[in-house]
Structure formats: C-alpha cells, structure tokens
Length: 131
Image (cartoon, rainbow, N blue to C red; front, side, top):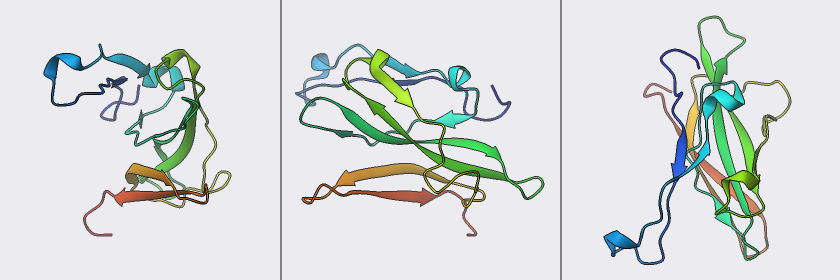
C-alpha cells in the first residue's frame, strides 16, 4: 500500500427495504487495494443491468508527470453478477486514454448513469479547492 493514501478494502451491502435496519446484507469485500497494487478507491456509483451484471468506474492515485504531484486515473470495473464479488474485474486502463494523466490533483467520486438510448455518462467531483 502507498503510505498516507487509501489502502483500505471496499465493501458493499444491500437491501430491498432501506428503512428496515435488519434487512441489510452482511458486508461483502469487493476489492483489497493491495491486490491491485495501487492506492485507490472504489467509490462506486454503479449501474446494475437488468441481467444482474454491473458496470462502474473506480480511481487510482498515481504520480503525475509533473514532479511532486499526484493524479487521478479513472478506470472501469465490471461484474457478471453484482452480488458476487468473485465476478468483479478491475481494468487498469485509463478511460481518458493510454498513459495520459489528464487529471492532475484529482477527480473522485465518479457517478455513472445510462440514458434511454443506452449511452453511458459520468460526472466527477474535482477534489482540490483551488482548481
């Protein structure tokens, strides 16, 4: 793990009755950052498709080409069964293209949605105050 950066696992839990505190599933570990070899977070806002598969975005925090600067790199994640963490796959590909680190200092908290034409869209939060 990278000292001082996110190196905690990501968990999920779900319910069909959010007002019932006893209805939540047992938390399931989705990913351990050490397994991906990077400081990361999986602040998923996933899309669960009608067939139970999942599409999501996640982020790594890496050294930028600019000295002493960190950059966010956004990647995709997929699963064939959103409830089964063993089906999750985490791409290492930068969705903004190759080895470009176009997001110095970082974006976070990707929000993903699919419109009525089946086109995927995403919003991100820029995490630095003086952008």
